[in-house]
Image (cartoon, rainbow, N blue to C red; front, top):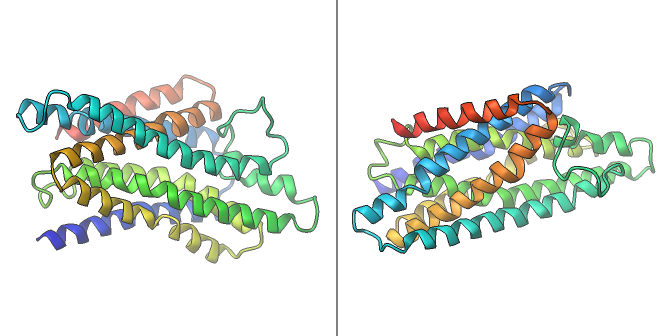
Length: 293
């Protein structure tokens, strides 16, 4: 039965990580770039669902375990430390991505937002526009930028996979909650979140001369570490109560950075109105309903 549980988690995270990122690569290969408002609403809605799952499920689970006497009263301090660690790890991985992509575009200076304020920037299509009339080796620069993005996002997907695995680890009956619990919800939301990441990989690869088919396949491959992270999170969370708390805390910190460090800034910058906040509000409510049933 345990082997079947691992197999089910592998299949679910393959769909979330590899298919989600690969779908983003495919969208990046064919998208007409005039969808700022739609993408803004989707990003903020996904952020709302993530925030609800983290606050109402992942971080609340240790509190329930304290009430049941399974954990000491100082456990919240451990949770906060684990959340901070998870946040810091994903922050550093995203810093690596920014360091090797933002500098590719000349117009980005100290006064420019660190996050994308346009769909062209989000999917790095502006790299091609910036370099297409420059030196003959600009295509190779774009190609290298795409490979760097692929490796950085592959690392980025590891802690995201741990979110899914840790969420499944806290289920008392995984078989019954395989397609209804917080782990499945996070798999869906992370899969949606992986779409713009996949776009960010495929566009510079294609602009650098790689065929669309190969670029989409490589982009999908960058989502594979999600599976490794999920298995790691599930295995660690299943060791004992303390490891479960640490896994949930790390997963929560990783998701909180994704929400507040990526999705919300990009959504608001891409559409400077109150509607992204309304979409976030709707996402929180939908997320609350999803984790309540």
